[in-house]
Image: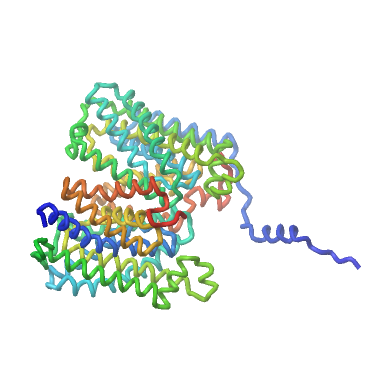
Length: 289
Length: 337
């Protein structure tokens, strides 16, 4: 292959690899919106918590980030269930303003706690390094690992939602909570499960990002916007849409970063998101509400 | 033998009566008392610069800034139910417009402020036209994103804005003049809300909030009205931003486009009671006075305490102070409040 073609392939691959990690974040946010009609502004901050948990496990006890992920995700699942039980459940079915403000408050609280406890310093988890060269294309090993794990988790969640009885109950609740209730589904428990699952997925994304990126208390906001862009691309409530949207955003960012600089790449999410909203208010693959 | 049969309509009426919450007979404050309190508040606000220290006047300026933001946000979001996170964007836009007109073109501060308000309204029109077609959640998220885009533009457009270095204004700010300008702005925003709330327009906006499709069906030109109030609502943060820039003499993208401007505005309005005239004013004064105290005592814990405070407001007082007062029968359930 020509040099420029190789470069293109390399940039695209690097984008796809990162996109799979974004998918974890977006799928969780989408599930929570689908089941409860709540936009969780604190979703990015849950990712931040997952990233810090991984960082500390690695730094203090040398725990492998992948092992840390296995420990952190269930822990964050419980945190999510607790948050739902104590706070979020109170604003389900309330006007949009209540849930937006509540989750913004939570976001401010978590960011503030992280700043106070762990300072504003940039941290990283240098657990993996190096790159794999296949046919002249170099692929970063940390990204490859993050991609594989993210893909496995996404597949597991997909199978759970489509095959397992409980997963079908989640989808039924998202479609119509009242009818689901009439059919004997314990909707309140489904909500606990979904917020827990969403939190665990965000934390898993955080654990994987910790390996690739730098960590800081306010990282959540940028990733929240990315998740929004992905959901707008893929349509609210669509699982496949969120996955494809995530890969697309990853690739778009990679190219923007390659052509211009990382600052512009960070802005891609916003541009995508506003562009899609203007052209198709219901999302690219989604149906309008 | 004729039996008395309840018609369906009567049965429905009885059911509705049984379901209606028992409202205590509202206490309607006598007109003289209302006017008296208003006069006292006006006297304190006008006399403040003559009797208070510079610190207190500056605090008053900041509190009035939040009143102007909360009331103007209320005009759109409190009445139509469209939750706007755009105030940070309009505030930042106003701050940069004001700062650039003063430093580059040497405009007087008040003219720069008016121009910033005008630009805010124009941009409001341009932004509102596409985004107000979006339904609730999408609209909220879209404006959150647009405010962030504005921050990025201000950071990247270095030839005009000097990027992250920020702009330093000549230290000519006259605190007292700026205080009175902000007082006028806060009064204007609140008076506008009062006038709208009592008008047909106010009723139509409430109809949009309760059921937009139904409002459209009965002939409310929803898109046009939403656009009108969005534009009006965007002018105030524009002027406020310019006045703030002049007063603080230094602005940078991270400060004036911070999402905090939107969140604290929304929290203020909700604390007092969104969709009421008095609520956002009381909420802005109360919440930000409290925040000022917290800020001085615990600078590092500020975001934590503020976040907790917001959560408490949402969970325990969803209708705000006004909702509480009206439920208890302390104030009339009238649109004039």
